[in-house]
Image 1 (cartoon, protein in one colour):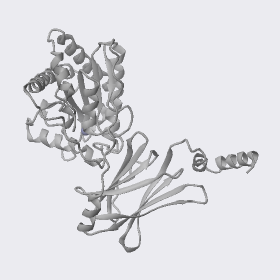
Image 2: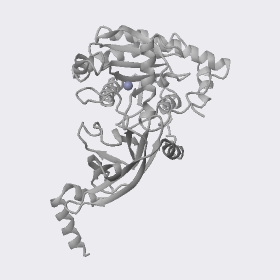
Image 3: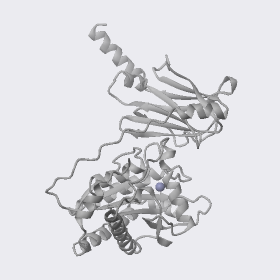
Image 4: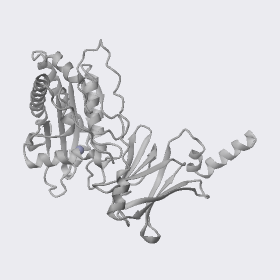
Length: 414
Ligand code: ZN
C-alpha cells in the first residue's frame, strides 16, 4: 500500500475507534476495557477480554486453593471496580494486575475443579477490538491434580536496585508498600483496594524522608506491581538497608467498630491469636497472586548469625517503641499498639524491620482518614520523627558492621 494511502487509513482508524488506533501502534501496551464471564455449552465457562490489540496468553491451573492462572504480556486494565467480583459458572471470582515488569496476570478462583480448554483470539470487525477468550471445562479431582502438577513457573529472580554509592553514608530506608498488581490486599466495602491506599501513603512517606536530606530512600515497589514477599526481604538485604518499614491497612468485615493502628515486629511466636491470624493472611499474598512463597531467609546457621538476629530484633523493637510514641499523638492506635507475629516480610536477620497496619478499611472512620491528605501528612510526619530519633540514637549504639556483613552473605532463599 502506498505511504499516502496507509496514512489515510491510519487516520480513518483513529477517527473510527480509539481501540483500533492503539492497535496500529505496536509499541503501546494493550488496554483491556472488558473482562466478561459467560456460561457456554456443556457447562463450560468462558472469560472474554476485550483488548486494544492481541497479546499472547498462557494459562495453567494450581491447587489449594483451586485457581487458573493466566499469564499475559503487559496489559493496562481499565475495568470497573466490580470486575471479577461476581460468580459465574465454574468461576467464583477473578483478580488481575501487573505481575512483573512487562507481564500481567489474571488469577481465576474456581468454584470447582476445572481445566483450561480453548484459548482463542478474534478481531471484532466493527471496531478492531481484539477478543481474547479462555474457556474453562469441568474436570474431576484427578484430572485437575494432574494438570496442576505440570505448572507454576516461578518468576525469574529480580535484580536488586543498583548498589548504593560508596560515598553516600546516609542511612538507607526501604519503604515497603504492601500488596500490588495482581494482589489487591484487603478491599473496602466502597471498592477501594488496600494496595492503592498503602502505595499512596508509602509515596508520601518517601517524599517526606527524602526532603529531609538525611536518608537514602528506596521502595520495594514504585508502582502498581506484584512483588513476592521473599523478594521484598531480599531487596532490603541486598541494598544493605538500615531500616525496613512495611505499610499495610487491614480489614475485619465482622467488626466494623474495630479501628486504629498497630505496629508489628517479627517473632516466631505471635503476641496473640489475632496477630497470628493476620500474619497468616498477609503471608498468603503470594498464593493470591498465583505463585508460592519461596523459602524464607536461610536458617540461622551459626552463633554469629544468631547474635545478629537477636540484635536486629532488639533494634526493631526499639524502633517500634519510638514509632508508637510518635504516632500516638497524631493518630488513633489500636488497644494493643505493638505486637509481634511471624510475618514473612519481617524475617530479615540483619535489617531492623517493622510492619505498620495503618488502620482498618472495614471501619468507615479509618477509611475516611486513610484517604485524607491532612491525616496522611500528620502520620508521615510522625513516622519521620520516629526515624530521626532512631538514627539519632543509633550513633551511640554502634552496630557491629562485621556481623551485619557476615549475615548479609547468607542468601535469602536457596
Ligand atoms: Zn496487607
